[in-house]
Image (tube, rainbow, N blue to C red; front, side, top):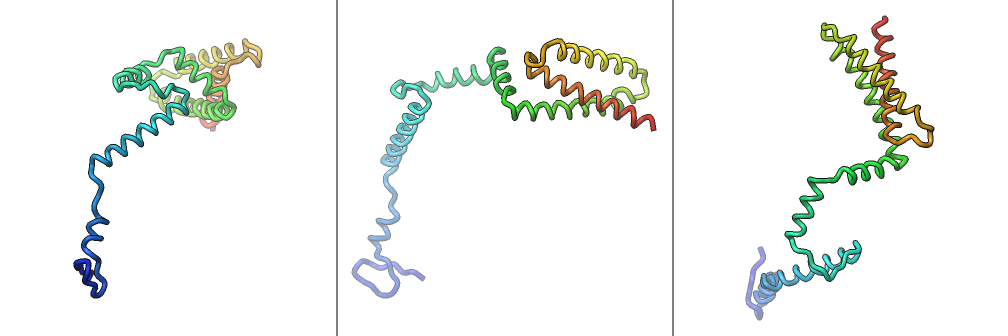
Length: 177
């Protein structure tokens, strides 16, 4: 067991009382808050300078709240379209989204037969008519333009169509057996 003794008496493993009190004493709370505020102000200054904002112009929290709510909940359609276009133009995103579109078309075709059509009603004709119309509209929109003028969205819709037709063909072969 560790014993505490006054500073002049040393017998065994003892710690002086004054040294222990000085080591455990925390700085006053007001000094610590000032240091924190200085650190945060310096950090905000560096971040503003790095982002290209004018570090000398402080912004009020009310301004931040108004800007946050406007950007968070009311994105303009042009801004949304610009973000979509910049996202989809990257080659790795086009490959990923094209593959997902192909698989989604296959999934929709597989889910159409037992779900919507296979309920015992006479919905087969309506589902077939709707499917043919959608496939033909996508085909017409895709092949009406030259290949280098087709949009990325047209490529995604065509990938969906190919997956859908492939799923329907496999489903037809499955029911033929």
